[in-house]
Image 1 (tube, rainbow, N blue to C red):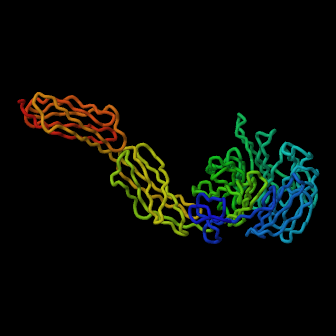
Image 2 (cartoon, helix red, strand yellow):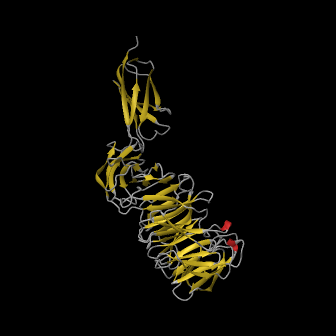
Image 3 (cartoon, one colour):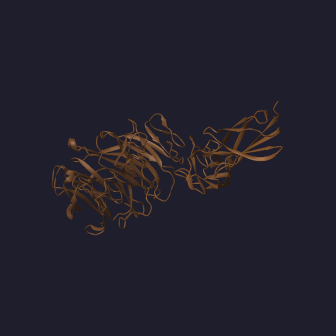
Length: 574
């Protein structure tokens, strides 16, 4: 690992990886996130399995083009432990509910390994020995796997689900077109999920949930997602179950992360926020402690490829975001390339290069603790009197407990006035905790500014703070230039300029002009204001002595009225 990338708190030491949101640091037990990267000795990727009991990570190398493959074994610190030898090409893997057995699907069937000794413990021969890859899952105390009787065009063949016990396999009768994907987790030991991939002949794939507690598979829920026009069909890349088993998340390359109720596969009442623009969903995984969900994607440049956030979709805490864009880290999260340790202390992510021939294992440690935050004192404005159309600063101070961020966090603000609610641009918090939210009020009258800090994976959200203020009309002014003397009966000219703060003055303004002399007061012809604010007043004084000209602007909805006077001494003609 090399130069650290910028993050919102502590630096994350690795080349090419950028953490885009919450604090991150390569340190366990500090309350901040850490990250390790291992280059995998594989040229393809089948699946990822995490054994939390023995603290082992299994990665299968589905090197189908060469007819070979392997299963790489690592510990939770990223050190390679061993390589499991398979008979032929391995595809996917599954862990028994007690973590004692790892089952690995391969061309000829499913083989099992003891997770303590890594010794081979059994083998289930598939109904067909074919080239096409298999899926495997473990539910209801039994092994489940898929198979097809064809050797080519694997993605468009009919696959059947089989159950195996005591070395004997039996067809369940469940089948469909495409390489049916199987998903199982220790949290719901009797549940098996089957997802159909999208293909040239499958435009509306299904998702199905099965009860595996009996001798066969009993479907409890099924759904297809296309609407009446055929649009909206699922393009599944990964499936995951929440820690309590109530929710199922689907990494859908078309729609992002679908969040569904596990009992009937209906849409959950609250969804996760969309993935960043341009990111295509590739993987999803829930932590076993129920705190986090990780969402993987394929994106380019600085767009996030990995988001770690609270598992509760109603929690608005901003996610911890990673952008993989370097030759030492990969370019995207591989499909089905996310898995958590049972206690949620580590996320394991497999990334791949753009070409798909190089792979990396990332070990991410989300923060172990969250710290309190608070606004101190009251908010204030600068300038003291807010004026419509004029820049305004809302000033305050935020205190953050825990690790001191290396770069500022941000607060957000909403202005509420007669025009409705408007979200203002986030403001960075300085090292001393002070901040200034900038605004340009657009409506005269009462306005309330509410400032919030939504927190991050390291810091809890702060209770909002508000400021009520009154936004005034913008002032205007008139400047006059008049001759010092004039002659009775002879024309004189007064020039001037009307200026205003805030919004631009409207077009077509006319100014009132009142002349006062010894004979009394009278109203003259209004003066038209040009686009640049200038105007001219022409008059022929009819009395000698002091003559006063009073010029006035009546104001408008957002500008105050103003006026000015000029006095000319008028003498008799010679």
